[in-house]
Length: 114
Picture 1: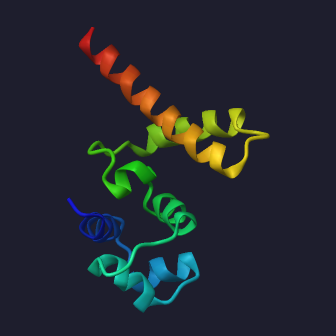
Picture 2: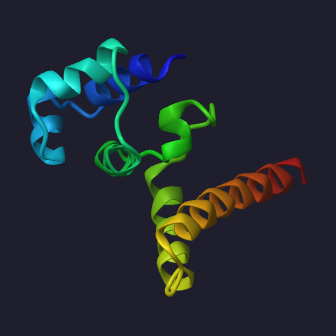
């Protein structure tokens, strides 16, 4: 699934209009609509904000992961991230968050096999 399709699907699932999401991001509705049409892509900063607004990981949002993490799992990851990311640069935090999510997904697979 393309990013634009996933973005639109997640927005509708969250019961938001394009205007509401654009307002939460501090951008115009036409700018947001261009992302759903696939003519433009959001900045990394807006991508992170979108993931937070839509309660998904950035990896899921951009299509790097086909598994949508539940809100509870996302909350657990966020708690671990906040407790362990102090002192990291913004770039290091992005990498750490991705690695933390990947680790938790792998452990979950391992435990479901047992």
